[in-house]
Length: 221
View 1 (spheres, rainbow, N blue to C red):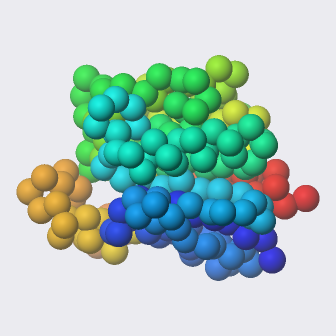
View 2: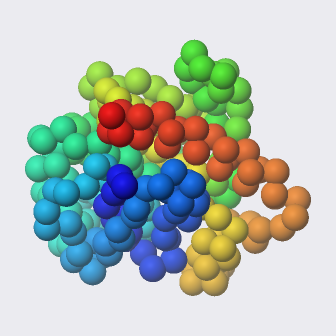
């Protein structure tokens, strides 16, 4: 059985749809709470996933535990380990790959449309995704641009076969969104899930599962 180390940064932001994908692919997930100082102490994992959270990757507001995680991630990348970063995780990965992470002019929140880039069946299509961020990443050197948005151009990238960074949240489920809304109340820009959103969640998760299948092919050989 393949095994993923998944770094969580907020109690409400668990693996979500990632766990559903792993269950159907016979992949085990071991969770670590980065915000509680928990990081893998060995490298017996096939791949790593970095989840989101309301923290700053760079600057004086970057918490000490996240600085420690950045050092850990840099060591991981020097060993060419497969890494998928989502939102905060995508910014962490971009930062460690030498790309700038900075505030954006128009923060994104709720359902937003992105354009998928590529030659596959999704290339040229638009998709509704969930967002909540006030910072964005530049594309790392040599990265392939995978998705763009109207308010923030850089929504997804890959470097080689094993490193992927996403700005949006395809792993979020209605349960996660409800939990975030309960915690952040009026601060949250996320719409409460409703039956009218079911098709958008289904399409987003379908795309995410395809991305995970392609990513896992690079480390499942």
